[in-house]
Image 1 (tube, rainbow, N blue to C red):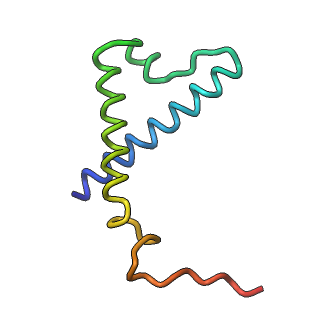
Image 2: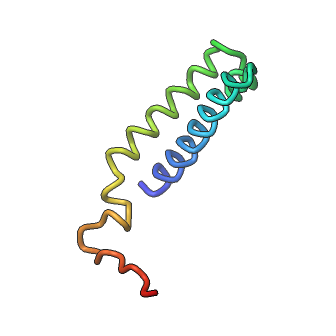
Length: 83
């Protein structure tokens, strides 16, 4: 399951960065969709990448609490540093 988590995390980061570039491209009148530019927009391969990124989001959404050290209910809450 650890390998699935790592792959899902990497795909989710790739998807997030791609959406950032899409949003910036809209503001600056450019087509910065890296997935479409590398894999031909509308191709089967680009569709597969989008589906894998979406599935990765679902996997991480469902397994986040179990894998996250910050959300672990048995872990103590972080203490703010003293000034």
